[in-house]
Structures are given as C-alpha cells and as structure tokens.
Amino acid sequence: MKDIVFYCCILAFYPRVFVVATRTAHGRGAGHCPRPSDEQAAGLLSGDKAVFYTDGIVEAMNEKEEMFGFERLLEVVQECKAMPADSLLKEIMERVNEFAGGAAQHDDLTVIVLSVTD
Image 1 (cartoon, rainbow, N blue to C red):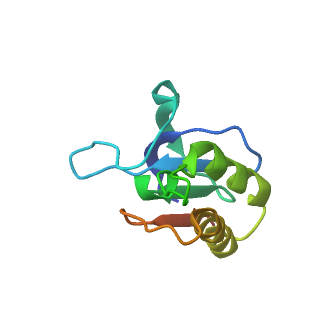
Image 2 (cartoon, rainbow, N blue to C red):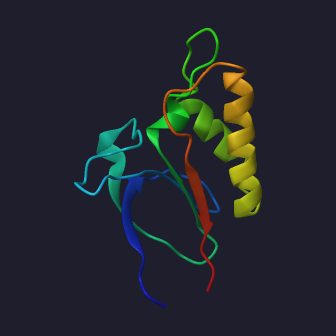
C-alpha cells in the first residue's frame, strides 16, 4: 500500500478522523485551520477518515449573519464519526444548510469525505 501524506489539523478521535483545510495550488489555505500550530503531516491508515472542506463551509452565514464556524463543523464530525463517509458528508451538508436557513451564501459550500480502506 502506498503512503498517503497530507497537511492537516490533526484531531484526537478514534477511529481517527482528520479535518483538513484544503490548499490552493500555491499552497495557501482555502479552508480554515483554527490552530496553525496543529498543522502537520499525517499518514492515513485503513479505517481512517478525512474531511476536506473549503472556507465556504465554516463561513456559511445564517440570517443573523452568524458564521457556522469550525467548532460547529467539529461537533458534527465528532457526533457522526462512526458513519460511513457518504452519510457523514450528507450530515455535514444538512447541518450547514439547516444553520444557514434561507440566508444567501456568497461562497461555495464544498466538502469531501473519504474513508481509507486496504
């Protein structure tokens, strides 16, 4: 099996779930890593999951102009970490859309959830 390595905010979950602020082609973060000191290389193992997201997810606003935020994203991931990748993706998007209500969004809402298998 080939090693898969990426840079991410590492969170202490079991099974391991990595929440990854996506990068642009120039290496700048397109997502939000709230603790840059936590950013480090991580290898994925069978059974791990990774949640990639763009800043539109954490910056999604509701009608009161409150942002969804990284903490809410982490809350969803922690609550649903045992779900299959496709179900976790649907849950994240449902929570973001529920939070935003009818408020217009001014950025893309992009999430990719992958599950590592042998």
